[in-house]
Structures are given as structure tokens and as C-alpha cells.
Image 1 (cartoon, rainbow, N blue to C red):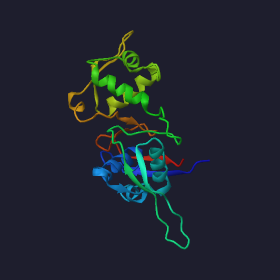
Image 2 (image 1 turned 45 degrees about the vertical axis):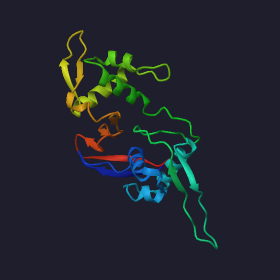
Image 3 (image 1 turned 180 degrees about the vertical axis):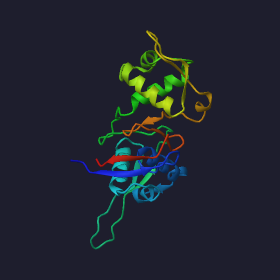
Length: 213
């Protein structure tokens, strides 16, 4: 059974753990071709396990976002040396590679919905589901409805027309939420919204769970 670590996160406070945070740190450390190690990423995080950071870096290397400049050298007569990485690609959106380097589909539905929300003027959950679906990832109406309700509670969406008999609720993205937010706000398992663009949690103090791989 995977181990569960509890992390207290206060509303509107930066979230210094998880791959969105790791990727932000990696992009900063890797500027100008600078090299870095997993420990340097770990030291700028609130992650309790170095292995979680190391695992993500290995995945990025497999996916060719990173190159290994110096491989890990175990201890013995010689001093142990950690793996040294260099950033090869630095997209704004956080990569989600599997252990073999292939892209994972995790989070793609929310990313597609966020892209559609920013493009649509006003929409219902059904309209959002259609607009956000692709051949690779289909978005169900129930999924779109859940995402919209969470974004509404967090203040991202405003109601254009309330629901009524035979009539679905219609939403619109608040203009103030469009600029500077290219990445999709994510719904955590605790049902709060995490904004990777600002590193903030909405709307109240929670205790989030992080499960070790």
C-alpha cells in the first residue's frame, strides 16, 4: 500500500511541492544552460522525500527534457556524486512523462477544458465538454460540470444564466482570470483548486494528501 504524507496548505499560500512546483524550480535552475541536481530542486521544495524529486527528474531525462551531464556515482573508496542534469527544453506547461518517457494523459482533460474556457464567450457544461474533447481525450459532461463548479467556487467563473427547469447553468470566465494564466487550474483530490500559474490554493485552508509512487 502506498504511503500517504499529509501536508497542511493554507488558502492563497504558495504550494512548494508536486511536479508543477518542481518544474518551475527546474526552469529557474536551468536558465542559460546551468546544471543542477535533484538535491537543489528538493532544497527549494517542501517535499519530504528526495526520491520523489529524483523520480521526476529521471522521467524528464527519459522524455528528453533533460540531459544527464554527469551520471550518479555510488560511494565506496570514492565520494558519492549525484546525477547532474542540464535542461534541454523549457515549455511553460508542466511535462507529465511516464517512467519510460512517454507522455501521460493525466491532467489533459482539465488542460483542454481550460483552453476551451478561455476561448468561449459563455458556455454550459455540455458545451464545454464538446469544445474540450479531442480524438485522444474525451471530456464527459459530468467531468465538465464538476470542473466548472470548482472554478466557480474559486472565483474563476461567473454565472451568466442560472440553472432552471429544463435549462442548464451558463458560465463565463472572469476577464481578470484570463491574463497570465496559460496553465489550467487543477482540482486536487481535496476538491480545492490549485493554480500552477500563481502557486496558490483556493479557497480555504486544507490538509492535502500526497501519495508516494
